[in-house]
Image (tube, rainbow over all chains, first blue to last red; front, top):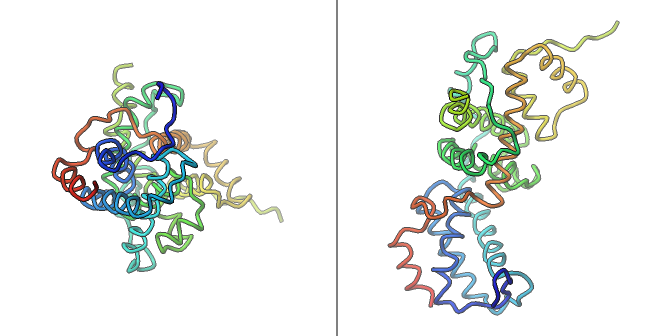
Length: 196
Length: 88
C-alpha cells in the first residue's frame, strides 16, 4: 500500500488492538469520562466487530466502520446511565456562584488574546478543553459532547440522555459557563494575556 | 403602547447567549440579548468566548488533539493485553 492510500480491506483480527485500540479509546474517552467504562466500550466494539466482520464489505475505511460500532455502543451506554435521571435539575452552585444577587458577574470575563485562526488552538486550547471537560459534572459533559462537539440534533440528544428539551438547554448553558471559566483559569488565553 | 424589551441581567444574558447558539431563542429574546450586549462589555466577551469554545469543541470532537502518545489518552497495558487475549 502506498503512503496516503486508504485501505478498505479487512485487517486480520490479531492486529486490531495495536492498530485501532488507542484510536477507539481516545474517541470514547472524549465523550465518556470513566476510563474503565471506555475500556469496556472498546472491548464491546471489538467483540461486535469480530462477530459481524462478514458485514464489513469495504464500503468505507475499516476505522470508520469500527467508530460507527463504537458510537452505537456509546449511545447504549448513555441510555443505560440516564434511565433514573430525575426532573427538574438541581441547582448548580458553581454556576450560581459566578453571579451576584443582582445577576451581575462577580468576576468579569477577561479578554482572551487568541483568535479562531490561531495555531495555539490546536496545540494548547484543545488539551486544556479536554481537561476542563473532565471536570464537568457527568450530565453536563454528556450534553455538551453530544450537542456541541458532535453536533447532534437536540431531539436526538434528549432521547439518548432521557432529558427534556428545557433541561438539555440548562445543561448546555451550565456546561459552557463552567468551561469558559475553566479555560480562563487554566487554559492558554489568560497566560498569553499576561505575557502580552 | 410600545412594549420595550425587558432589561436583562448578566446571568440571564449568559443563558440567552447559549440558547441562541442552540437555536432556541425567539425574535423578541434576540433583541433583548442584543441590547444587553451593547451595554455590557463583560457579556460581549463572554458571547465571543462561547463561539470560540464551540468551535474548539467541534475541532476536538472531529480530530482530537495531537498529544496522541499521552498515557491518559491510550489504553492501559492491562486492558490492551486483555483485549489481545479476547480478539485473535
